[in-house]
Image (cartoon, rainbow, N blue to C red):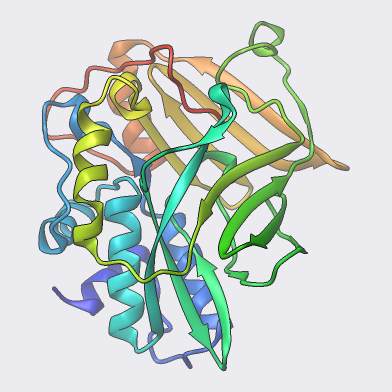
Length: 290
């Protein structure tokens, strides 16, 4: 594995920069705008693997994306390789339909320490819940970013990440009540502790997310990429985009149905993804949102 190849993949050219917050932010933003958060492999009949070398080959050489166990694992490796002080952490995702956090640790995120300050870095949550800048590990502090206001809160050793969102305008009225649309102004995202983890700690999650009938990844094919203005997603056969701050405190959300013949072109044009096998798009009862 070659850090120079990683930098080339994400289009990052300032590799000699200091190990400071500006550099950390640049790397995060380059990765999240070039590496999609996606689970397309499992809907092409392929497995999603944890092995770092396999992940590197998949994302860097084949120019694909992945879910958090791959994308954030690669980010953790790259930041460590650059010389940042990093810690792998595990999270519990808030499941909106049942109003509770997952019982199992299914999300991988990264803590980075710079000058005795700790930051949370995550390039793989997808949709409009994705952070655009590292979040300082400070309880109760509102941290405004382009997508929304993020807030971390600590209670008895457990940290909670939440988001305060804008209003949204949906021109296509038939999607106003769609399950693909985030509807709450205050959005819980996930919880986590500061206990250091290794990739082996996520073996159960990697199997569960690919096989369980309660896994949204099994029910839905998904590809999401952050853009300079917002985020775009392919959820099943629906293409969705969100433009942040389209008007004062309002996001613009648009939807378009994509037929089977168009999907390959949409993946290439919007996400830079070329698949080796045929995708069977799926959008079941358990769905992602934008």
